Image 1 (tube, chains in turn cyan, orange):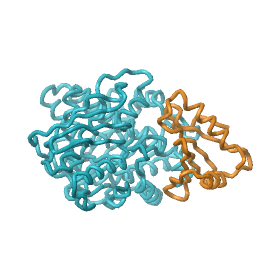
Image 2 (tube, chains in turn yellow, orange):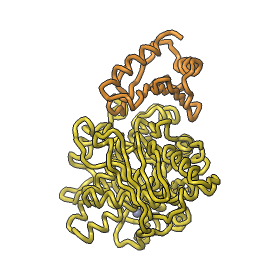
Image 3 (spheres, chains in turn cyan, red):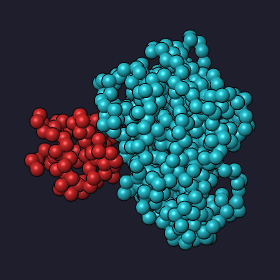
Image 4 (cartoon, protein in one colour):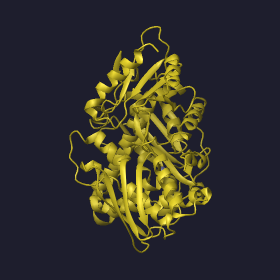
Length: 427
Length: 93
Ligand SMILES: [Zn+2]
């Protein structure tokens, strides 16, 4: 089975910056964001419940992707389907997974896996971890077992018993077959198309569009290497179904609202911070990378250049068709999009919101302003934790407000970034 | 000259400045001819993988050369691996 099967099944929704594999929405994120996101859910719910929710989110959406792919590839036997699953997992940059399963369950083994490997890369030198890190892989292994043996969606349980992030030799999973739990509705291209609003136009389009096209062409061929990881743009990247992030994030927020509503503002702030981490690490990494230099040229650091580049990156990676509605360097940025991967999910699954719900978008808009104003690009800065802390945890000079949100029934999502007023709340 | 590259995480990425007069495109061609695996996705960015899993990424239009040390090499051995790779690359073909 060739990883190119993923390339054949990659598609996008033009004018909306949405990417799909087998008609399921996906997004490229880097390991810094991925680890931060999982940690945020862990912090909100405790590891055990967080792990269950994240595993369920991965299981649901990978079931849909694999079911689509086995049909179009004509993989009919369990062996063919498991081989296809292994290939898909590696192509997405999630790692190398061996599945030793039957219709009654079994075991899986992973090494390397994106989450545990990159957790060790990022934190292994100074933090000791006691909990496993690979809920996404657990959910994937469960989904692969379901699809291989024709079991109902969301009927296989998976638990990670040993994990490289915990300094075990390899990651091991136990799979058992139970009853189908909470069968979630479909979240595919049709739902995304219904949730999107009319395309918007923005500034700098003559700069953004060609970069978006170049990045899209490049990322279309981006696949895991022989060990199943994607090392690109100076990062470890994954292509991940956006339902993994959305279901885990919104389920966790609902749980917090129900059980500890006083903690909800903190959780929302952390989800926004995930947007900071994403833009600082992924967008910043892309802008400084040889890949960028080849496609666009060496980075100079001019405000229009960083803004246009950031919008193009967001669109190509599958965040949404981000546009600059207004831009006044040093003062104000208005970011607009006809929905994004967050609102597409929210509208389809959660119904009408009473407040803006695109937390990653909110944090990302603020972080783009930081990239424009406070990063000395010409000096080729190292985008490490120290620099991140200096930029984002040392008093932010900006405030960001999502003034319109498709999840709330508005015609677009719009985030206004402006100079922070003294005494205003943290965002 | 070999230095840590801009977004380097734990010594994985290194920037190699070729001696004046050396051509980055010729380096890419030489590596490809000597059996390095060509992983380039676009012709504007050459991406070659050697037998040890290390990659040399070359931007022909600017001459930038980035060494990507194989991530299975333990962090404390990566600087040495980068130095050895840089020395090997600077040997005349
Ligand atoms: Zn929104």
